[in-house]
Image (cartoon, rainbow, N blue to C red; front, side, top):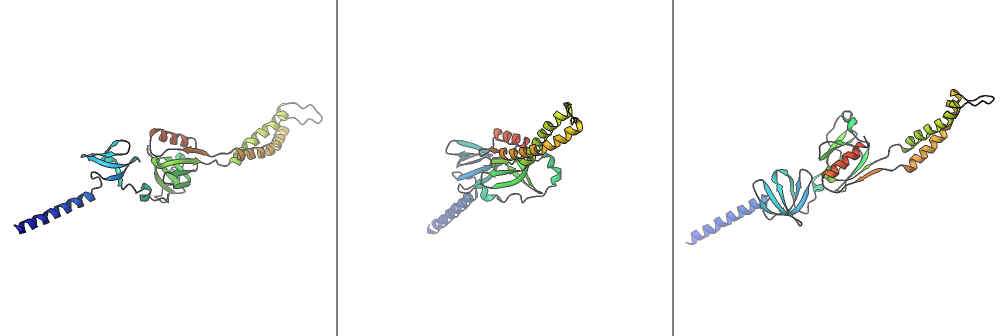
Length: 245
């Protein structure tokens, strides 16, 4: 009887050990406190209180979430941040032929992410409904919209644009009075030729004034977003991009 009892105890210990090993290897085991990251960028933290064949129930501080298993990208311990699994030194990815996408890319901008990383002087284009393609020189990266917190489009050449605008105004101010209004004096300096000459003379100081005004009034185009992904955020990002193609 003693031998049978000892053998039974050994068998029970082996079964218990095997079960504990199986449970520890199951990332979606019941009662586990974890952080769920989905392919669409959604994140939630809580306890797994139920598990069906294709769905788990995650109990959070606010509500119970029913999450399809096929949509889960990562199952992390609560203390692990998603940024720990990703390369924060962005734009060291596959190479694309930049000439093929220049038409669809925006002006240069800075992108600030939820994980505190920043991508500077990049161009962006729409990749999918939930992702953007980020381009810098001949390097590209696919970026999830869910992690975008701020996009800053920089004002390009404010002095040059101001100079051109001011110069055009100065030219017409000097050109019109002489070209279309008869002078009648002696000598007569009115006419098309003198109008062009006087217009060019007026365009230079007016252009300089316009350039200075352009620099003083220039401001970056800044867009702020909440964390996560939702239709209003996607629509606003696409609208911001359309203003800077």
